[in-house]
Length: 249
Image 1 (cartoon, rainbow, N blue to C red):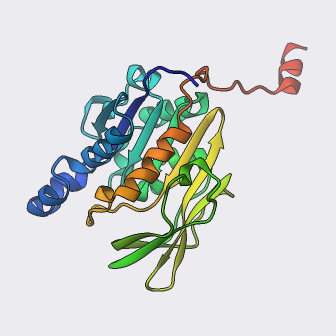
Image 2: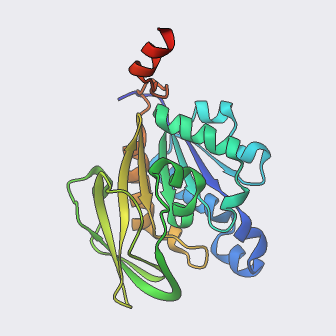
């Protein structure tokens, strides 16, 4: 493992902070959800370079130069997925395939880059009645589950339920259960190209979930697992030998 400091970018579309009740948002997430997520990470990675970016930033804050030095990108989106530039999606996808880690949070399941990398709709059932969520660890041997209590109790949260239209994950680490009886694969991993992806669902704009210590720990563990700072960053080449042969002959 490289001993250089990690470069981490927390991306948030930032629309709810501008459009929701400003008093409520200011009390719950005074620095935005990206600020709360970044703050939680700094307690685990005090030497890391942790920055934030939003949809409103030039190039969504995700220029080629930024992504080239980013070890892990965390993505939170909700109501503005369609406003994300295709050029930015192309860049993020290429860097994930080349070895950049990606942590997708909550309603980021509908993010363009996530659905493109997974190749499915990533649709799910949902209901927002402020129900209790229990996050159960089902793969305690995985590094992302290290030191995480089971279950994590979230007093109020938006319900996400099956069917979650994703490919078979590499690892199923957490399953959530809700008061209404629904269950959800709330913590899963995937590999795409040289990159690692971790999806973790708890964390809605209407509840202070990102301030919970155990949620912060899971996210920090996820960052540590997807990060591959020693990885030679280059998207895998794709070729068709048969086609190349016939084109030359």
